[in-house]
Length: 143
Ligand code: CMP
View 1 (spheres, helix red, strand yellow):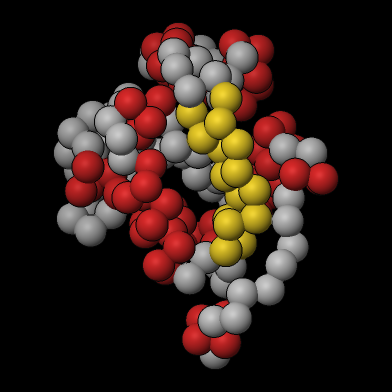
View 2 (cartoon, helix red, strand yellow):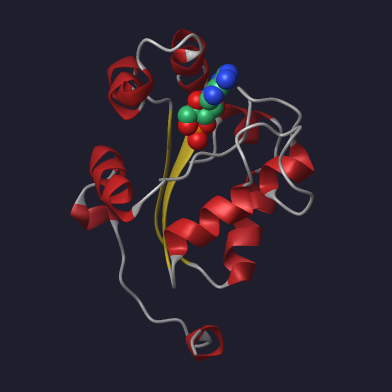
């Protein structure tokens, strides 16, 4: 997900460009202001933590972009590309490390496992909104 700060800071193109250049394949994309109930469902595991109310408020504060990316080890790869939660600590070369200085306004969210990805994709997409297609350059990205 490109969070409201990524949209508001005009960084969506740069971030999507990194994922494309890495060799991942975009299979679904939409923009919405996430409704409160959906944000609470998405972040249910953080309910009760001190940052939870601010997190839900931020995620629902403006348009965000939900995406599904496919590729070899996509979950692990995207998490490495995002960097650790706080932009101050995130490594140079990561999305958060290169573009952010905040823990709350950290530009992107990515699923932390394949199981979480399946759950989160189901929250944001219908099957008919996901696209299977071939890319002519895919042989360059496989062993
Ligand atoms: P995300 O990958 O979307 O998953 C949970 C989010 O909670 C995380 O990114 C941060 O935006 C937010 N978060 C986690 N820890 C903190 C914290 N200590 N303070 C503020 N926000 C946090």
